[in-house]
Amino acid sequence: MRTDAFVKLMMCACAMFLLASCAISTKGLIPEPPVSGVRQIDKQVQLMPVQGGRSSSFGREAYITNEQYRDAMRQALLDAGSFRVLADEGPIDWQLFSDIITITTEGGVSPMYAIVVQYWLVETDTGKEIWRKGINTRHKVNWNEAFAGGTRIIMAINGATKKNLSGLIEALSKADLPD
Image 1: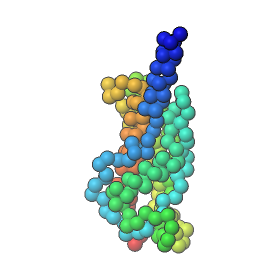
Image 2: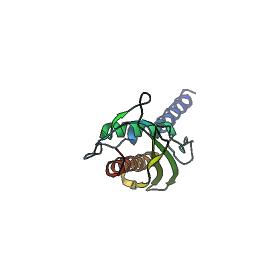
Image 3: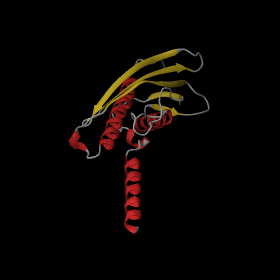
Image 4: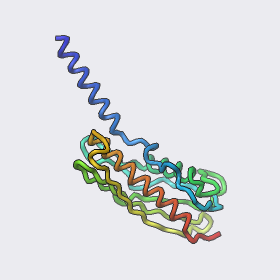
């Protein structure tokens, strides 16, 4: 009797460990090291809520929530120093919008994750769109990079998202934006 209870307890503990290790964390989505060589845009920008993200469900494709993506984008922009100020209130020059258009996961031994995000800046005073860019990134994790399949999928998600956020920062830095 004690052996059966011990085996059940160990199986539950292993299942909880595997589920916890397969969770997407916002920290893993942020480019490291921060994107360098970025020009700072001398504007106060409000990061608007992200659209198009969704929650993952057990046994299904893995996704990123709107909140996770916004938090990772905020930290990536802060780390890179892209704008003079990222603010939620006060005098705002521009608003940065983002919409996750597509998320695809190709599972298997070496998973591939792709994410397409549309970004645009709106001038707060006029409501005029001043910049728009769609960024499509992919990341593949080889079978020998991690033992557990769930871990490889999380690594693929993190890699594609980091590339997308790096692409956003580079695109903003090169953009011909009004003063």
